Image 1 (tube, rainbow, N blue to C red):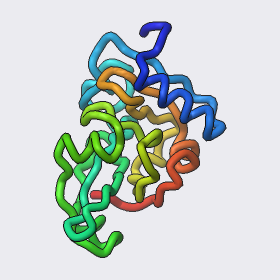
Image 2: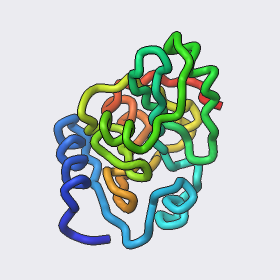
Image 3: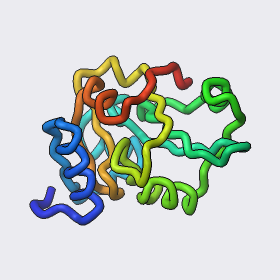
Image 4: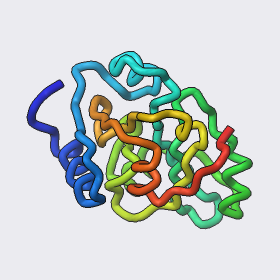
Length: 159
């Protein structure tokens, strides 16, 4: 872990402070790009990793953020029903354009604009969870309540 944060990680630290949560962004030497890599680097269960996945509405082209527990695969049909349109997986350019971050470091907050957000109910099973903080090796620890507070996300079953 290093002292001075990169500009993307610092942006997330400032966004957390603006939301009134006392979370601390840390940058790891190891990559935290995937849920398993993050869990290995942090010494936690993969289920404690809150992975931020961006989908795209087929008709509206609107970004949809699903924050899923590390091992869970998102059932796109379930989420499609909630947003009343079919979804497609967003490509890297779409993700960067709508969030300002690259795949592998997309945080649950600090995006260019507010996104429709869904939170995997499985994340609520843990006292502490970890989320990406803007780069493939930056993360922050928070509670499920704090995740709901900073995202205003709707808790759903994603799998």
